[in-house]
Image 1 (cartoon, rainbow, N blue to C red):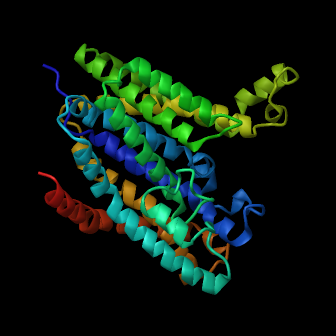
Image 2 (cartoon, rainbow, N blue to C red; image 1 turned 135 degrees about the vertical axis):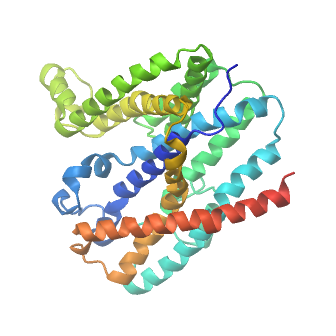
Image 3 (cartoon, helix red, strand yellow; image 1 turned 90 degrees about the vertical axis):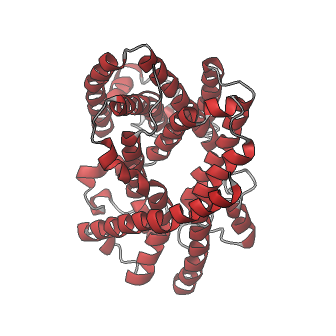
Amino acid sequence: MFSLPKRFHFLDVLRGLAALTVVCFHWNHFWIGVMGRENMAPRSWTPFYRELFVFYDYGAFGVDFFFTLSGFVFFWKYSQSIARKEITAREFFILRLSRLYPLHLLTLVVVGILQYFYLQQYSSYFIYPLNDFYHFFLNSIFANMSGFERGPSFNGPTWSISIEMQLYVLFFCLCFFGAMKAKYMILIALVGAGLSLPPLMSFHGAGLWSFFVGGLVFYGYRWTVEKGEWKFLFKTSLFILPVLVVLVVAEIHSNYFFTFLNKYFGDSLPWDQLKHGPGLTAYILRKMVVTGVLFPVIIFTFALADTRPNTIGPRVSFIGNLSYSSYLLHFPLQMAFVLLFGNDLLLYSLPATFLMFFLVLVILSLASYNYFETPVQNVIRRKFLK
């Protein structure tokens, strides 16, 4: 009889790696903090740019991958339990807050302290300017991306955590009231896709799209395993996935697709950006392909890999333990680097600085998970859950 895995080890690995791609993308914080957004340093200054150009240019997609992966994991882990009323709203949100809130609050306070010292030294804030009591309060209740904010503030990358919390509320309500059928999920995902496109360009829309695409991927995975087709589809996806990755990376590097559009349809296209080379429209179209095709195939393939017995998944799943901590710690660590070592851009162009930063970040992240996040989480759950 079919039973769902107790843990998806390879998805844990993907989560950890996705967090590091976002950190790579945010390496430009060092340039922005010194030169401003209008005077970015040339790409040739960026460490390992030739090898990591996809992550430097498109690492922001890592957040969309988080949303997609969250959708898969939450529909796997909670949807049936909530629908059967085996888990209450109180229990569900205690489980989530005990995991997310301790480190969120700690890094919020640390960033506030570091911003004070940065202001004293450089007469401005580092990257995110709104570091007042009002935005501290919004951040403290995960409302820093709720519509009440006046702009980015404090530990800026946590905007995605704010959206994730709002997605949890919607997810719980849909499951509780039995509205988790595939047709509803497709509708919500399409609404999210529409909101994420110009002119709205809504981050909430992008979250809706990716989260419910992830839920649909889980439904496809469950059907595949229940029908006994997973071995054939796993072999097929092992062929499709590398080809898809190569095509996407090659297109990003060489702009084949947009060169073709410009050459044959340039005069009839309504998007000015396409007539002048890849711009905003190109970025959005790529994002829809990556989040709507590539990411689902990656998650589906690695979920099937976890279905196989005797894999190396349990031995490498610890990589996932650094995902949340590295995501929340990398911005305050960047501030600490600038305060300790100065803001000379040549320093942050050195491969040695890049490697040292990531080494320190990984060590801090694993230490945070093992010696802070997990112990505090266990204390909260023992106190407030049966």
